[in-house]
Length: 327
Length: 296
Image (cartoon, rainbow over all chains, first blue to last red; front, side, top):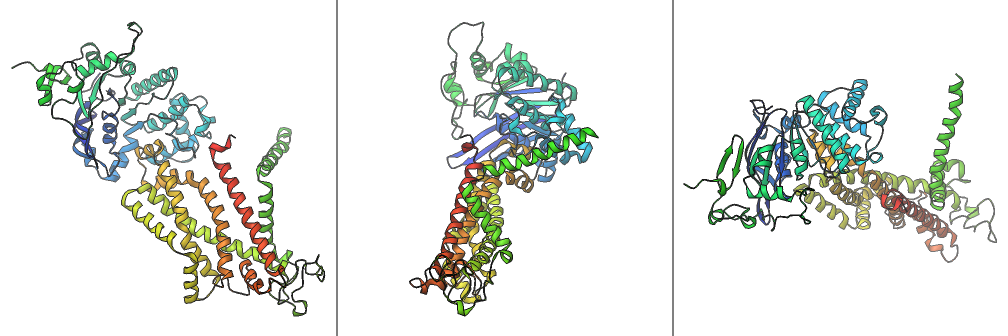
């Protein structure tokens, strides 16, 4: 399924926030690659740097506090971090687009749905009039919005959450981007609508061969949608691999812990499992492994130095001292 | 053919009903008063029984028609130059509205633009523009008007310019606040993801969402400007005589307060009622446009 040349390649991406409390290393040396048509799920706790990674790919890190301080983001071999502002604007929306968590604030309440979809189509494809209308209806019907042509004049408040999220999807996909970044797109939808939306997304992804970076903390969604999984902790990817590898053979204790937290009906323990402790303060990280204070299997050297990358099998890489063979 | 004819009255009826239901929601007292003011300003020539600035000296300081010594030719009496007070009040609405609407339009345009830029850009630009607004707010309006008049002489244009250029910070602050909260919405981030420029986002995505509060601020500021213009005219640094500005009429009636109180009284009442109506209307508009209060 994976083609040879990656569509997106992120190398050593570093995004820091310079605050009064010190430098917050929100993303600290993240690398991964994504083939056309592939889905990468990025999982991790809140504040682990998932969303900042996504924003960095789009170069939309909130300035002036946040800045991308290092690394490369190659889209079709071209480093988007080196593009001029104008060129970057052309990349956004036409080659990369985004769906966000909350469909309630993702649409402008002051404009009709048709106008909002049309705006993007007009900007990137330069069509107007009847042709524009036709494409807007197309974009909306692609996300299975019933009788799309009659809903063009509707305002966001006249639609349900699921319907609004579909409109957001329609806007994101209207210009056939190569890469879609989905930042927890189903978190605020109820479960049945979630499944519908994911199914729809997968259908469109397959049809148009779109790559997706899917940010989530729901392992159920990961299993259903992703080809690859990257587990993030404290601004770093601690384990990355194919979905099967991560689920069947997790190496990093953090990955294990996350998987154990997933509520399951076949394990009747009565209590939900959690990971003890708090995520670390990204403004002053200790040397060693950031997960060491919460890790049940922490060893002395975990506190001393950050573990190197260890390849478990092809494409399955982790940063953990446990995986490092004793010399 | 028959279907078209059958549909048309329904559509007209629908439009009228819609208009009527809108009218019915208006607050009665303030709407009626404001309509009177606007009608007076527009149709002053037709409505005023006498000329506003030419008086008959034989008819000096006549009281209102219902008081002993008054006559029906001068319903609200005359001033010490024999000018009809009712006519002057009617023409005065024109001045009040012209000054307040132009000044508010001027201040509103500048203030909205500055508020949008400050709120959207943030950082240094925001700090700079808001300090400018603070400076503007700390300027004593009346003192500046006195100075400007002393230098350039009293004129209609100067009143508008002075008020307009000192009023914009009120708009800028409100609009900046709104912008700050609107720009946190995801659709702003998504517009940037879609490749839109900052200018476009401010104009198309933020501005339409601040229009409701812009309307409310404008209504309340119109009332404030009427009051300020009245004060300036009263002090002789506003609209120059012989224009029938309300503040000027009150000033002219000042010496006659004990002998002919109607000369200053009626313009005062006119101004008071207009301000009251304007403020009531502004309050109503604010409640109406606030979605939190709409449900109640």
